[in-house]
Image (cartoon, rainbow, N blue to C red):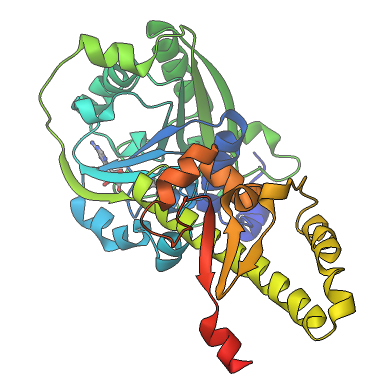
Length: 372
Ligand code: SAH
């Protein structure tokens, strides 16, 4: 390479967005494409990739592993549920766990994952650990997809201030040929295919040096599932769990019940409010009173264009307003939350005041009448 040419480039190489963000975005795009339910990040460091992935709605299980417990603990609180997660529980379930241990050791908690990410990890491994790594990740964990990223040493000539390696803890940095030869051998040994790509484009005219970060995406060829692997290999735990968060989810009956009760009361209140305002409008005028029923039909139309049978109409009797559960169940959100009418009845039993036959939500309007 022409010396002046090289120096010119060393002045200008700056990635936007920063390279670590591009690597994490690469993983996020992969998650959005293949929709894995269970994802493990090996060498998760400060949990920043895990934090980003917790917003991917397909993921139900997220696990992180690092040999340095302190680096994980620094920001692991960012993986805890927020108050809003309790106020509006998600429809999916999500469990996030962090483990302290080495990728050179097998632990049953690492079984059953669909996607395993190893972002800028392998270059931190000692020779002996790197030797064991393929058997742990591809042989034992055996997920459908493995992503491995590592620095491309051919790019280093374009990076100012890099003397030997990009980071003092790196044990090696590979050229494209070195990484690809290791990856192809590993893939063939464990029955995976591998595709090469990267992030951090080289400058125009320097394409030969390749991406700044080289990436191998491995796909398991056989359809074997994590569960079948698990049953074959009962074994002792060697990792220490340092963090576990179970997010509130509507899959959990407790949160579903709260959500259904709130939605039922909210819907019934809206219906009651409309009913009462119509009633007031007609109350003082006996001629118009007879038109009240007709108007209620229009009102029901307005409420979500329901097919209203006679027994679904809300009505007032003395100081009580009755909103039939069938009407409430016809509202899309209540319907989606409960699935069946029987489930609705079961979830609100004893929690919402109902008519004596249990078919309608009942409100007492005595005080409201007094106020009027
Ligand atoms: N994946 C992170 C950072 C990688 S730095 C990111 O994308 O930003 C490499 C990490 O691997 C460090 O946190 C280091 O503690 C961890 N590590 C090194 N050797 C390890 C081993 N044998 N097992 C598990 N983690 C290891």
